[in-house]
Length: 465
Image: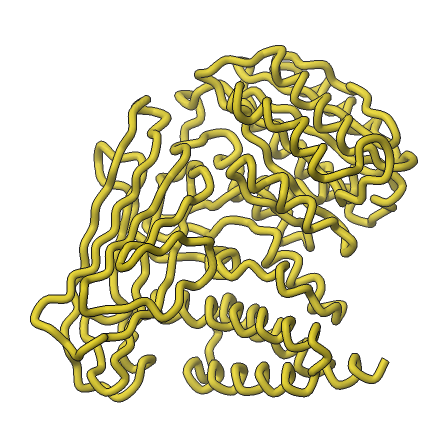
């Protein structure tokens, strides 16, 4: 078995989002995929590894597709348009969607470099065949007008497929099949080599992207994270080359990967199983081939009578009643939600209008676009927050975000050497969710419940080790 097993296995689970008529799949994310793997192996995650918004965006959302003439759609809604005067709380959801691509012939050219970690730390894996299938599934989507290069690295970086047209699939297949497991990990040189290959066919009107598949356990050459980031920044800023990292392995260097991808406005992805593999390179491949919007900024304006209790995930800048979030770049086939809980300050008013706007650089239109949406809130007679969530999609998304938030709190309590309190928190959360979704067959709710149950059933045992 050789590298491509874990490496390419990685690639199988990275791209972003597919769609049906008005329900697409959420984007592949490191946080959720890593959580599935670690919970199966009963490895307690660090709190910072639990990125709440990535859990809420991993599954399918039922959101409207872009209207005619738009490449992106903005949807704003309350979990229920009526708020409970007794609890004074409500949930809002901002949804973002792009259309799925069915005809790639009109998509702008793609210029991509695949950088594959073949170091010894990648190890062998019985998923080699599947990972190769994933790579080939990706490569077969490329067209003669596209360009591809492949870089492998262990203690040194080597160009196994120089930058060239993607017209000869046989040559690309040979390059992939020749990759063999190697020695130590010089990730810095691998990344720089990928950028240099991309520059050979760089054009502003192309999708220029470096995709690295790695466990990020760098131990040779430049190993300091700050220096790696400093040396790669010019390629992101001066040439606007996109960067995507696909992680693999239970020892994946999560902190370094987060640092690197935060500079390039892309997600980290992580391969855990065959489902993740299919999700990325078959179901969601259009997100690699067709970026839609760059530098998106979401602004949410709360009415004066409402205060924010909690935003589920993200890193917002909050100024009085305004919430601003710098989002990752938006690719084709994407669906994404932002969830928040609010509370009335002084009871219900006649008009409580929530406003949202999304500004971004529209790649196809080559101009800056701003979308606006509003949603009104009135009083109800229901008795609890969950009773107010009549919108079943918001209810589901909120509960998954809530479970992720509780998972993060569990990890914090465990890190503070309080496994019993961590277990109690999970047990209460599991009980509440099962009561609300009694007998549910929803695979997304069940997936999150399984993660929580795996940890709850083993926290006491772990504490005694």
